[in-house]
Amino acid sequence: MESELADFLRTRRARLRPEEVGLVSYGARRVPGLRREELAQLAGVSPIYYTRLEQGQSTNASASVIEALARALVLTDDERAYLHDLARPRPAKRRRAPRPERAARGVEQLIAAMVDVPALVLGRRTEVLAWNELGHLLVGGHYDREAPSRPADRPNLTRMLFLDPHSRELYRRWDEQAGLAVASLRLVAGRHPDDAELTALVGELVMRSPEFASCWAKHPVQVCDAGTKALHHPLVGDLDLDYQVLHLPGDDGHRLLTYSAAPGSSDEAALRLLRR
Image (cartoon, rainbow, N blue to C red; front, side):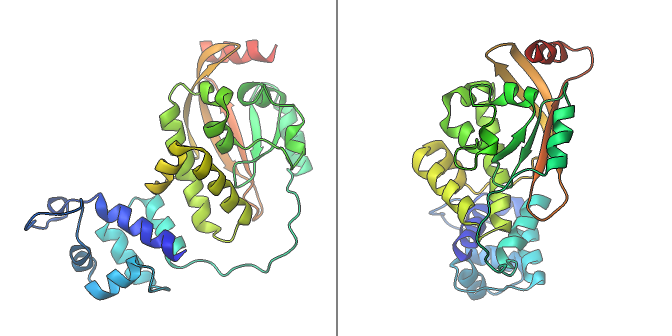
């Protein structure tokens, strides 16, 4: 976690210019952004202490110091929460033998009843634990309908986005979608630093996708719980769907992802056509 904290601080320091935070710039700068001593001055901490923090040589910074750094770095609310996760990680839980995850039976029954709404149940690593008929047809029709029930080869939305050509073609604004996916995964990684499966997923994507590796290195952080996806479906063409992510009860990080179209729109008609 020390290296993640150091990387995050460096990327956020590099994006600020002195004049943006009320400082006068003196002399040529070898790299973009604020100097360490400038950021330390803005945060009210010693340059030596900040340097140790950014180099991963100091841990357990106080909440007041983290808040001061967040203000100095002009962080968003999502970035601020992420910085706290990195700087003051939660105590590691007692390790138990991993059990294959699956969606709760009641949630599976719920999405099966949502016949007009594409719906998926996701694990915290964006693995698909269940999908209803329309959800399957919308985002993974080229996958086996029963694949989410098999932990060994169940689909993962982030892996599909970066490594599956069919899934890549589904998004008309792929670059935007890819950035949001990485930013969301970064948040999860900050909250669960000991998740071996998540670490393995990130390692695989860094090795196999230069685009993922480049975006991951920039350390984007953003909660992506609602918005609009611009899709190009191979069967029904272009459609713009609103999506909503609902966090399910429990501490396993399961989420319900649903898509919807404006009533009376061509997008709604396309969903009806897809279901038929």
